[in-house]
Length: 382
Ligand code: NDP
Ligand code: MG
Image (cartoon, rainbow, N blue to C red; front, side, top):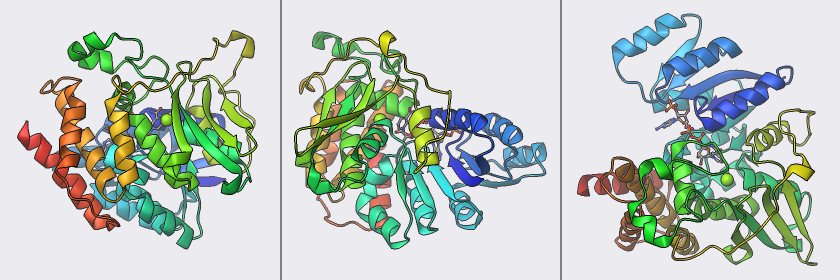
């Protein structure tokens, strides 16, 4: 029985993970779970899976804390980010699945790796901000990093045991998000509700908005760079509106290997949890004869400027990916609060990057500091 910790249990990846655990109840047990503030949901999950330890990172009110503890007196319940990091350092688990959304997931990834535990990573921001520190830490601790993001799981599966020298290119597929067919003239009037509707995937708000701007794909190019150790010249993204091919590896002989299924996160989650084995599962079934025709298209610069800004920043490296990611998180908040329009998200991000002096090999403290400061400055400005 594999013991594991699920961070972000109340979210979209968290919910898919729980569906996997329900089916694979004899294989896995949950020993720690976290949410930010959704206590009703996490307490319900804890009751169903009998989880001994719970962490809420965003509940500071003492009366609410006491009320939550009173509802589950048999469980250890901790509050605040430091307490979650402490629980990750003390609890006995084999694998930590980090499905916290955004830069808030950074410290948890390091806590799991520092402990020498296997890290199943949905939180791509951890690699974007600090891949240069996380990868060496994982190596030093002799542990493993397993991708949960569907594109990276696909690449991981297709690469198999092939050395990097046999890979010509990685091709990351992109759905194109909510506005792949919207006339450019209509972009200025895009509403929050429209941007939150993803055509293929049912995901959390942040990653859905990042799909609409295609910033998500820039994050995924950076994620692939760190996960698979390839330079940016050998990583490309391509629009594939059906989201059936989750990504492809092109080998030096010209052969392309793809991994396919109907779009469903339960599959990459199950693989990250069962690796190096494959477990029998009925959760995701793909009927080839029912699939739509598969198509591919390049990523249009005018429609998705944030993707191209992300690529520039990826090439620059250092602390700039953190600055851009933080600026994007602030811009998404401003957009959701209706303080800026959809097309201004790119401008807010570009301005933040242009005004920042790069730092080549930032420490974790520098990364965390820049992340907080850039975000605060932008929120104050608008
Ligand atoms: P959701 O928004 O659905 O869930 C986020 C989870 O993180 C919730 O449990 C939430 O708790 C918790 N959380 C939110 N803010 C904080 C914070 N400040 N500190 C600690 N925990 C917090 O996100 P998703 O599940 O969609 O995404 C999670 C991660 O996985 C992201 O990095 C995303 O890019 C990545 N990912 C997601 C995919 C998907 O299909 N959803 C696909 C591939 C990658 P609460 O509910 O209490 O707010
Ligand atoms: Mg993805």
